[in-house]
Image (cartoon, rainbow, N blue to C red; front, side):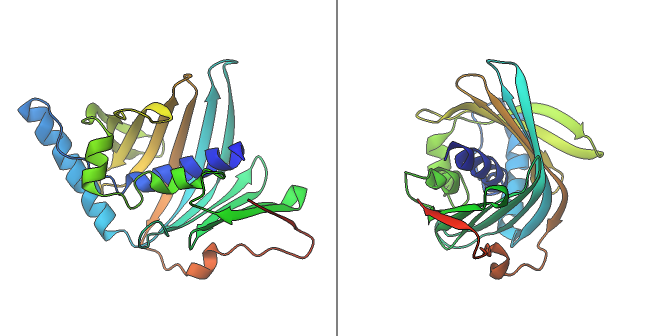
Length: 234
């Protein structure tokens, strides 16, 4: 289930960052004001975001062997109350896989293997609880207690001509990663993240062709399983 955790974590991480309402940083006045304005844009984006559809690409770098794997597909997202947000990632490259989280349940479909893993999204066993716990519906107070003040790393233009502001956040302790970098566009949407793990592995995720508030139905997050699919319950 490690692969499930990796795919789900990074996809949901990108979307979850939109909900991050970090408290103003303990920095010099000018830097503090700049970062606060960025956080305010992110908060407005979080508040106004009712649904999302975007292309998604992911690069996973293995520091031990200095190699990387690349993935691409589409992601859809709808916020909901508690931990019941709707997330669906349809990977197309290098192979077709679908991970969907809806109504507190997850489904991971691997058509090539004719197998689907299903279970409780909040269970420790399948690790999806870690996905949903990273900011999708976390309060300002919870985030303030979990992360150090953000660091401003400058203005950058990503490929495709997308103007962004680059931030770095560091967990206060007990996290599975050392730090994360976030690229936020002018509307306050985090369109790229990079997570550095404790062993120096890195995962970079990019959202492209972002559609804010498209018409989505909760039915789109239900994965249809054919009679030829073997179901493994987590």
